[in-house]
Image (cartoon, rainbow, N blue to C red; front, side, top):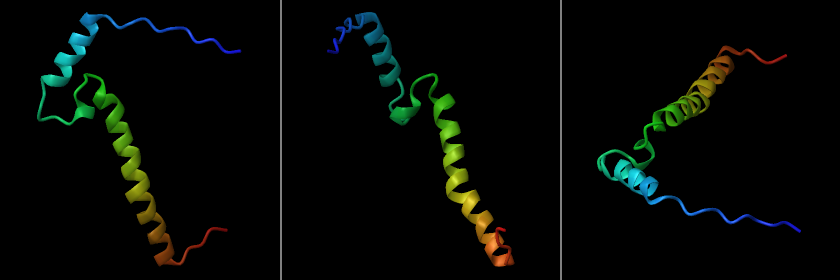
Length: 70
């Protein structure tokens, strides 16, 4: 039988710190407001762009040139 431990309540200082971070930049998207957001989001953007743009264009070029995988 699994037993779950009850998580302690977060401190009010931590809650207020994050509230200040998220409310201090109203014109910035929500996912870019924390200090470490760029570290997470920009690699995702790069991989997404590579998979949606670069790879199809590469294989389109191969198809136009008449090259086939062997």
